[in-house]
Image 1 (tube, rainbow, N blue to C red):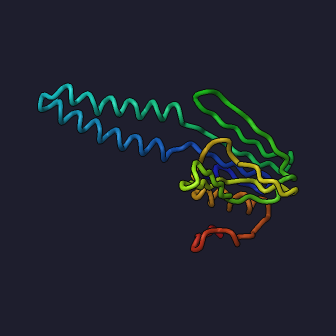
Image 2 (cartoon, helix red, strand yellow):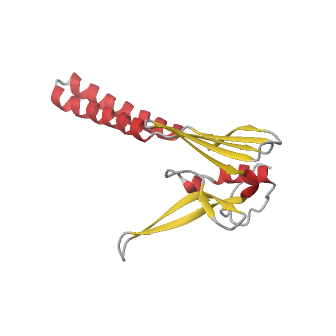
Image 3 (cartoon, helix red, strand yellow):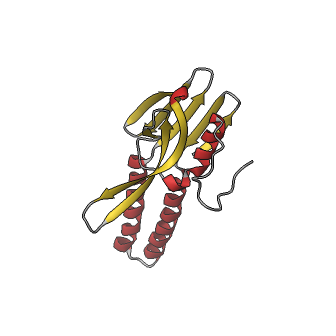
Length: 171
């Protein structure tokens, strides 16, 4: 998430998943180059395979792309999350005064006794101690520290004890 607007009373964070789009564009360019090379040599059937893979990648992006916008507004005591995807728009609201801080939380999923995976998710820590996920979709939680820092600064919480070692701050 990137800060798109910040004032004393308002903070807006947006996530357009540009990294997913850029990675797909780069891989597609390589695949289309391969298709061109195969077509130059006359291997039309083989040339179709990278084209089909590139099309499948873009379909994957279209079906999984999620754009989100967080608006923190002190004047209305409101936090609003708007998530747009191919399936429509969803909105969530919280009272800003109910949020104590925000952090990255580790969630463990155990598929079997021997295989464990952990997911890092950005969460709100509410004043009553409950943890509320900031987003209703998977995100790069370990890369969310910039958003966490922006929200903490906006809330007046300068605690950085739980930040990764060596994290650089914008002071």
